[in-house]
Image 1 (cartoon, one colour):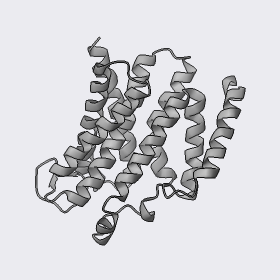
Image 2 (cartoon, rainbow, N blue to C red; image 1 turned 30 degrees about the horizontal axis):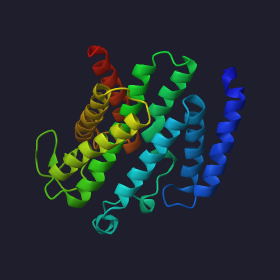
Image 3 (cartoon, rainbow, N blue to C red; image 1 turned 180 degrees about the horizontal axis):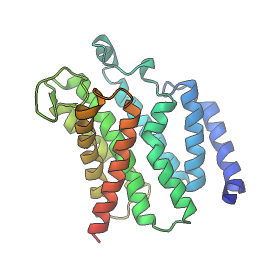
Length: 246
């Protein structure tokens, strides 16, 4: 683990420290959330570089913005995110744990397997932004919501519920994150972009199925754990798609 003592890591730490000190007043994260975001940013910057850091910063930005859309309405219905939409440490790692592990593996392997690792990295965040877009837009504009497993009508905000507006928003979120990853150089071709978009979208639908079947029945399964499972599934699915398309 000697590479963690390299000067690049100290540089990554101090860069993130300065950015967090400047940005911590923005209504994106809680105080502890900003601390954990700094740890995340240091790992990404040290393992991959600025493109990974910027990608996750944009994920946070778009995720926060879509959460704020119709926030007063969602709050009045009791289905808004807590803490005024600010994310805490559990949200940071529920969204980014998979991507962080992939970044560390990339560093440990000295870039070996970059094609598959980058597609998996991109897909993990594509899935999470798809989930956020679908959930937040669905809660605001999803007029009719149905349980994904049996299409039975259920209240907005039910685990495993989907709506037409939310489903379309999920695909938009997955596509947006895929395009960001493409522009930042993680994806080398239109095929890779397509793989990431559909892996993220499919994983979001799978997350709804998982939520409908298990989340309300097993108390220790939290939203953050479900998010982790979702991003892992998206990454594995994208690697399978990428491998079979060679």
